[in-house]
Image 1: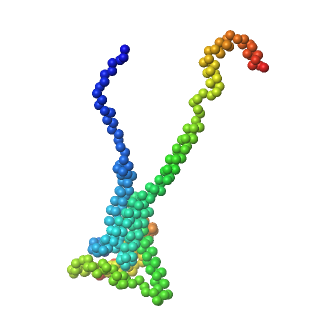
Image 2: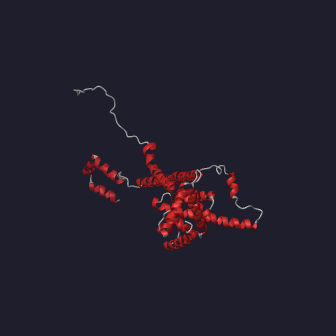
Image 3: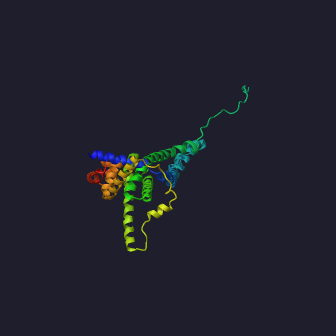
Length: 111
Length: 217
């Protein structure tokens, strides 16, 4: 009994929906198009809102990379290592050490 | 002795195919495709409900322009605030927004009516005047009604009149359940109340309507 009433009410309602006048249908279509424009414009706005944030993030990553790269220990040898290399490379100095009085140089070092 | 070098005729540089990445084509399409797909889905959804939504708002407000404004506001709000939500959630969300707009409109009218009561010099909302100013109002948009159609119209008018006299929550529950076909959970979400309240409002609405309209049917 209750279902009959509801079905009848639904039928009447659907009938009235189907017979909506052209002007109302047109206005509803216009309203729908405005809502869809809102979706597209909203997406464009979101893209522009995130663009500066993305730029800042990229700049921050680049800056951190530069700082880390410049702070890395240099692969070049230090001054002491260069002196040792010079001594080893210079054959005359080795000969000097062999030929001259080693004890004299030790005494000189103590003075 | 110099090595002998055989000189082959110059055939030009080897052809190297460099893949060209054009933002205007693939990249833009890949970025915009989800947005377009979302817009298409929303278009389908709104097209499927707009006429019923208008009739529901029209029954509640008994005024074409106010009903159109309410439906348009609900569409815009849904697109703006909930367009990115899953499409299964759109229907209860849309009707929740629409019911809020209908209540806002009814509240505004009550305030206006009180102000008009205090200021007798001002005229109340003149529907007849608006209709006269509307260039489309005089355009006939349907053929003359046969007797059967007339009976249907009269039955619907009786239902609308009785529905309009129901308390707001009963009216909402009945229209969302019967006209829009929402289930109890969806109706509760749309009305912002518990499922138990929906059942109570709905049961009272059906009881009253059957008493007052059902006999005439």
